[in-house]
Image (spheres, rainbow, N blue to C red):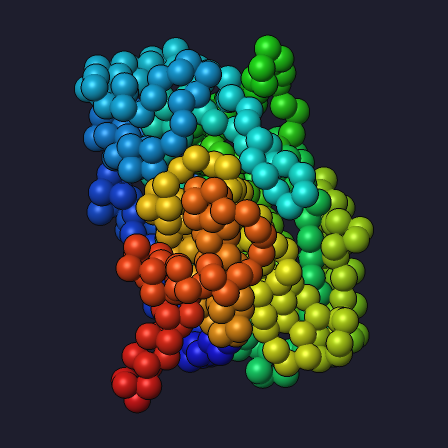
Length: 445
């Protein structure tokens, strides 16, 4: 469960103590950024605003870089049913077509296809833009992201090049060890769906003066949404699933990051998930009041049930952050994260699925590896529990395929299909991965 704390640098451009890894991190703009543009990032531009950017967005080389990202990410088709594979077959034609439309101002994005993905006991809406629109969004992001990235705070970790969940968790762990036990868990209710368009465009406009680029951003914010035969235009929010949305979400919350840092408060944020780590109850109360005021003034809402303040040394007053529960000096995988994985395992190992064991194991392995890769610092008993569930489910499938009666754990099943049987089939086991990782760490000491 231990995460090594990063060393601390006391001198940063913000004048606050942040991890050395964040200070040294270098954001790498796309090759389309010229030396003159890169120099202007450091020295500043006249009036603090960037002009003449649409020509960079509409260049074929920028669109090719955007297309490379879209092709790499793959994904489903949008409302026009054009797949990534079909776009690839005539990519030169489509990219030239997009370049011309962007330059002459005739480009208009298609509606976003609305789908739903499981989230807890409910569903979460997701928007799937057309492949062509994903290419344009990727190109737009390549051009404007460095402008904002240059100013983002070191403790903003979400959707940023070279940073991730583990960096945010290390920062939280570091401050807890340093005595920041009072924590404000701030949960923005339906954040991506409620960002005010006018206020967001104003924040983007504070750094970008190219009217055509601003219009392009606005077009993506106001893309129609299609669900079955219903079509409507959103009045707020940035569609989840759009390539440009994570950047815009960070742009909108950047001023909150700055305000908290200037107040001397330690806020660790990953997209809309944020915690403020404090040394006293009074400081935590002040931090929560400051967040409430900013959130209200900027058209957002704190979740009334999920936002709370507490001393995480006390049982029941801990907090959850990025899949983990922090409480009483310990950290473990939160119940919701475990339940979600178990639900996926059960869905993929139904006894009447009709798939072969080889197929099921091949489908399970990426899920298990990915989960372990993120939660590899969890307690070893967590891994043995999951491994046991997977093997019980697989044995039940084999029993059904052999037309044998009976349910649950059975000595006969273990003898016929021991753990080694599944290992020979290539089943990924978290316990074994954890054991090997521990041996590797011991060997390096």
